Amino acid sequence: MTKELKIETRRGTLLDGVLFGTGDKADTVKSSGIAASRGSDTVLICITGIHGNFYSNPFYYNIGNTLTADGIDFIYAQTNDAFGTAWSGKVNRNTQS
Image 1 (cartoon, rainbow, N blue to C red):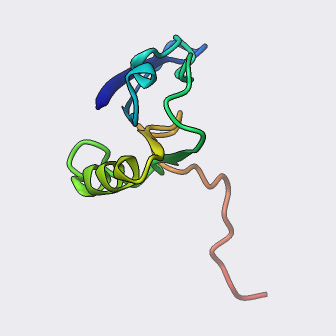
Image 2 (cartoon, rainbow, N blue to C red):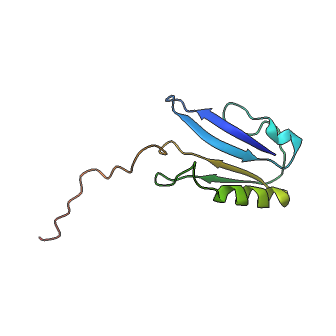
């Protein structure tokens, strides 16, 4: 069983995710994104980095289906920084003293 997650942050950013649940109870999700009732005693949470492509990566389907077959719930979701790049601030690239 899979459930699409759409979680709004406090800043108003809408983040996407997917819950691979092992039981019928796993499809109840609070607005915070945390399962309201347990489908499994174990859950693996995988979050994307700022350089990953959440939408075109089919790899997480293999992970989610394999884990749920073994009784483990799986959440694959975006982070708050999913839409930007890493800010490095002022960087002195001059290596000479």
